[in-house]
Length: 225
Image (cartoon, rainbow, N blue to C red; front, top):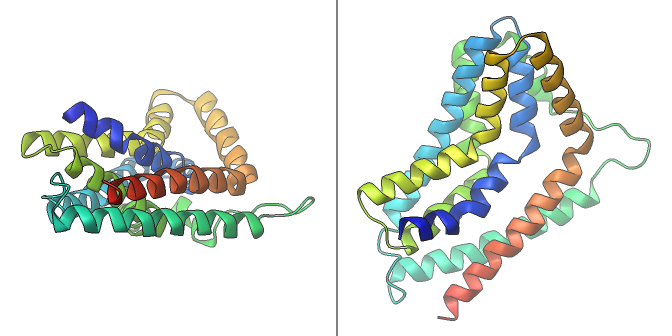
């Protein structure tokens, strides 16, 4: 059941991990004067946000492993609505993408990240992971999938922990590269940041459309049981 739960939530976890803006943000933070400290705090906040949302949803839909239960029906309808919303967001993002010759700019909230206080960095990590609408939908969908797999107690905690680790792998990877390397690591991470900034619209659109279709399909499949 645990393996089934991990397999069910894997697409959502990877979709969270591949979001460009958290990776851009962590690279900007790591390049600041307190990069090492703030990078670790951002990663801690990021993982805490995901853990809180996933745990709350998992507890709320604890009976979803019974296909006839109200929790299961709500989870399936939630997937249908969430999948449709992700597809709409993906289409909207593609429509508003930078046209040829236009330069993609990172969000305004990244402008002061290099000099951000420890508390602000920790809070920002939690908000970007847990309160971001796209990540909230993906995390909730993953938690519902874990419930429907029928894992409980220790198995549920392990499944949530695996989800958080996979969804945090890019942020944790950036912090690890920064801690392990010197100037070469900084140059590499800056290159990754520039790639993400340039291609953020395409990356976000692909993630939203692919995962939205998967979530929508899972919801429709569940309703048809």
